[in-house]
Image (cartoon, rainbow, N blue to C red; front, side, top):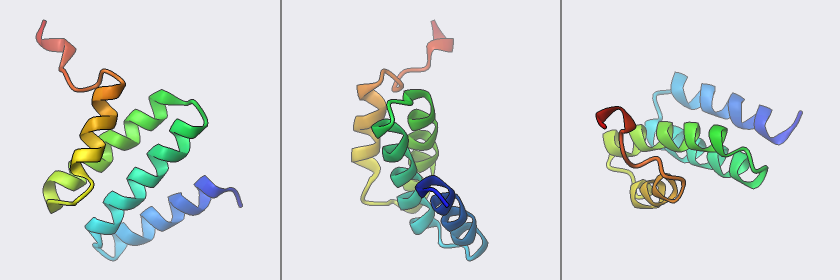
Length: 81
């Protein structure tokens, strides 16, 4: 089993147990995994999911997640232009 498969299982388990702070951390970990693989689209997807959880849970990672999304130009809604 590769690293992401385990992360996927861990995310599913944390959701089932309603451990949303853990879900946030795991989404952040998944985003880092894809960022390290240079798959920025996938990384930003997981950073976005992590941010949703971070805002809902007031998680300590929220500033780091916002920084990552801004780094990749994902902080503005392009549909508003």
